Amino acid sequence: MAQMAFSGSFDHSLDGKGRVIIPASFREALGEDFTITINPNKTAVAIYPKAMWDQQLERLSHINPMDKIGIKYERYVMSVSFSGNSMDAQGRVLIPVKLRNKIGLTRDIVFVGLNSYIEVWDAEVYAKMEAETEDDFESLADYVYEKYPI
Image (cartoon, rainbow, N blue to C red; front, side, top):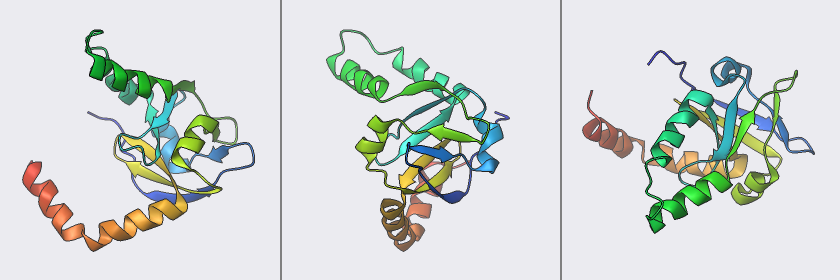
């Protein structure tokens, strides 16, 4: 896949209306039609470019309407997903209040590139998670290289 990968982390601030400036290095890969939702662990906001969100929708489209567990998951995901977003002329985007509240975003946030999508973390929560990850980095690397060989 010849898509640009998202990488790096960037400290930013939400303004009083819940808007944030998308880091310049993410703008091109994000494009003009993206979805803002919750990440799979419900720890951060996730921002998916259209092509990546379409893959998520494809997965959900295979859930049988009679599968109560699958539909419960799909209902939740779709209820916290806001599609058709674009940046304004200043590169800002509004993080929906529903997601800001669910994640507990405060004024200080961190954008994290996660290869195929972007996460937006509350800065304090991210700092704690990052410190824990650094403490356990060697075993995490071993896990990834063992489970996902090239």
